[in-house]
Length: 177
Image (cartoon, one colour):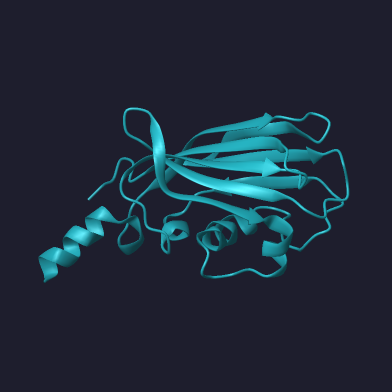
């Protein structure tokens, strides 16, 4: 029984101590009349601590409807779809967060680093400042050891994709026993 628990602990990050870190961050504007990304970079803010900074300049305000497609890819000879590919109407989600949706846990983990802390309408740009990864962020959505890409694809609410944010991260990097 204990051996089985230990095996599960080693396989899933959420049940034991692991290490997570950003490896890359890319932001792409597909409609420069709607959204621009003046800042999209990783910064080292401490020894071994890497933080993401994104500034999304919204050019058509106010935002009253936006759809986000959230994907997770795992690197195995290239990035392949892994576990989640979900879409949410963001304004509805922010007004009525649902704990039964996986996006809830990712949003909750990153919310304290951003100004996305209220429901629509949005009359301002979106800023994520010094967002660093912590093991506890992945407690409710445990992922096995590996390299991952999370993509956030943004739709302007009129069925037109306007931007993509790709977040690359490693889980269980340089684990020390």
